[in-house]
Amino acid sequence: MGDFKELEVWKRGHDMALVIFKLTTDFPKKEQFGLISQMRRSSQSIPTNIAEGCGRDSQKELIRFCSIAMGSASELEYQLILARDIEFISSETYSNHNEELLILKRKLNAFIQYLKTQLPNTKQP
Image 1 (cartoon, one colour):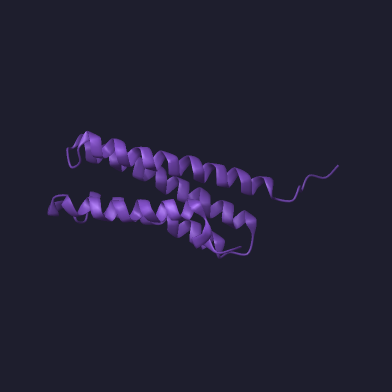
Image 2 (tube, helix red, strand yellow):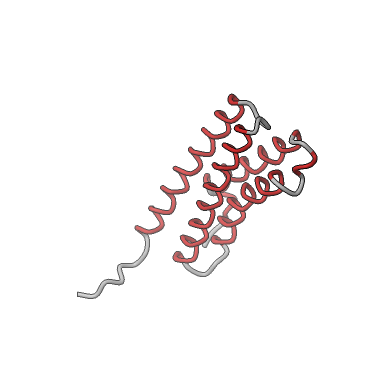
């Protein structure tokens, strides 16, 4: 379907994964297999699913994998709230990263909507 590395939404997802990996290095070590692992998996799932969708055979599959990426972004959105509420991150850190995540989700949604408009009309008269 194309080179995923050229997509702005993939680039933003990749940047978010890098931020989350760095952010979670300061979490308590007891969370290594808990919240750290969950946040890292959620964050890397976003660009991973976009990349996988681009490697598939059809626009419908790309849409499906982008929808999975959106689900991972929503998971990460909650995990950031949790990290803030249990005071692993400050409210300011939360606000900055949540704002970037919400931008990513809006762009991903716009990309999905655009892809849907590119599907051939399968309705019969």
